[in-house]
Length: 442
Image (cartoon, rainbow, N blue to C red; front, side):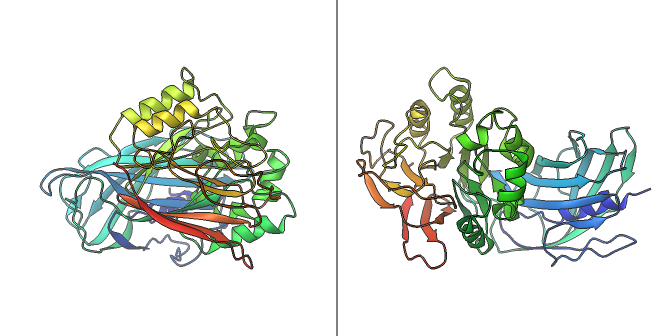
């Protein structure tokens, strides 16, 4: 027996696969009751006892490359969010995935078995991550995707094979290390208060901007609670929940160490109670950190960052957290993350993004003590312009290249292999813009 809700969930999740050079993925997945329309938007879809609330599939991306005749490592990253309705006793506890193309199995390893936490009744988000080897370049044509679901009682639900049509733009699997697609990374901090027209205005900017959405904390006001996330964030920036990678601000963290924050964002927010994590995006390595926790040398977060950066040499690195190391706003500079700044600088990081002060600032590359360092320093953006009331800048710190305290908007970064572009995009009707480009230092 195949459960229709599980079948559709798997179909929508698996049909979102892509590869670094992928330019089109068209699902062709059917069940006996309905045709899943690949052009329909992701949103609440009633499928019997299960409601799929959102499904987001990040592209497959090469995390290491070699000669064409050697195995090539790829990573599948898919976040599946779903809500189960009352009266459902069997909950999905495990997904088993395998992938093959027209020439046979793509993976050099056994199918991956993904253990999912069995949630209480309500929302649940699961990050599905599968790293596997290709013994040969993937062929154009159709990928066949197989899956099995297992409930918490151990009952297996065989899923029919799914297919996705794939086309390539001619890129070679033996591209040099560091090569990868150009990707969009867009967001801001200090966002949602119920009834705020500015939060809706910046959410409308996101409606027209593709790519991964980041938040820089203080996602809701006056404090993080189930109600503020549901009623204030949900109707605005929550439209993009499935592609959002957040960090927590002090308003998210107040009172309960972010319980409502983790409940709302799920695994996309990193380990519960910690809230710091990393991921790769295109050719870039991204660290999402928690400035509500200690960042000094000797702290758990500092040790984690050191280990994360030591695992591999990354050509381009970006980090983001809520409280800015440097700021001309009324909250001022915060030294908590100074030691982590130096870890990032030693690893060759390019960018740090923060919020907390409700204004926009761009700093020239500098070290962790604010000394200009155009060769090895880190460029910092303060982007506290997501929708809450703006703050007046109080003078200007050293090394400020651009600033504005009268405009709501988002920062759009285009992350290329070896370089990046930035653009501050204002809400409709406001003229301020800031843009530029730079190369990764080393």
